Image 1: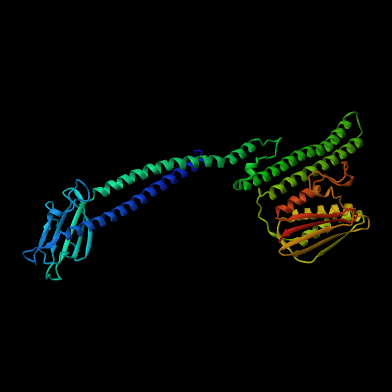
Image 2: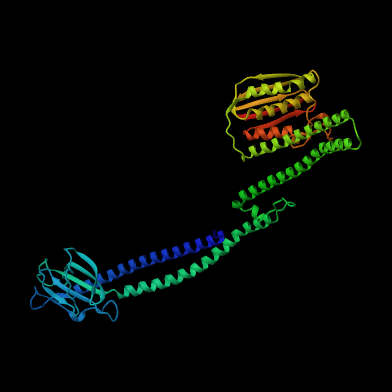
Length: 470
């Protein structure tokens, strides 16, 4: 597919628009000029026709006879041209006619007082005017008031055509000059306007895994059309940087977490091979190896579950889900964690104020509630109560899990959903699992279009609020 250039497209649009504008201006100017010249020419023709009519007078011998003073005929409108005229009395008697008059069939229209038309006579274009009912100006003696004249006067239109051609040439030359000037200015303005985009592209080329900052110049910030693009690119780079960092930390943490059970398993197997042992010792060693394998399997299962949940949240996987009862999944999760609660002498208080149904996988919701309940039980004091409440409001369903434990420090609150993050600085597992439970819960809730928010104050406990569209 051929490559396209925005700059070349804009230049082509500007040049074409300027050409169309120039042609339109030339056409309008020529049209207006031709009309003005033609109206002036028609006025001159009417003046000449009146001049010809003024040369008709009554004879001295016969007062009622009209004659024409041909020696006083005015010169033609255009020097070197030959005008034509003829004069009739009201009784259709021919009074005068120029020597070059050419008869033309249909030259006289229906009865009107004034008529102007253009004819081609012997290869020459003429414009003729006809005036009727013109009174005889020489009224000496007893003259009948009905004596009127019909005068037809024609002159070549070559002067108009030459004038229009001259105007066309001048306007065309002026339009070409203006087109060149405006085109050059438009190209300069276009290149200057596209300079911020080129600067932004140069800054974008500098982005690399070691440089995630987009630092466009002030000219880019001052361009309104580039502001949405700059904001979108900055947001995209922040997201990519965050994802890249999370991926790198995930690999490092996963390698660290996998290293411990693998090292323990390797050490156990090596110790079994160091010297001959009894069958009971071998059995005990294999059982310890199986326990290490179980912890490793649990970690791998959690990592795969997190990766799958994040793919669902990103919309990369599609599932055909049936509506499930959210309260039922809560009860199943409570039954799952009851042994842990009894072991720590913690009571679970569940209240469902509203019935809620949501298209979801019940295993996903049960895993979320189990993770939240396990965390609440783990940090609740002995003899304490974990409250789980379900209610709906404005088309959303809310599931809250609250405990009366020590709470979460404010510095740790923004990081509790990070993968492999545990509140204690050590990685001892007596305080919890692998640090993936809340990360998996958040990814699963976001996959269903919801969100999860923590509320905690040190010494007052923690409350986790899950909001789901139902």
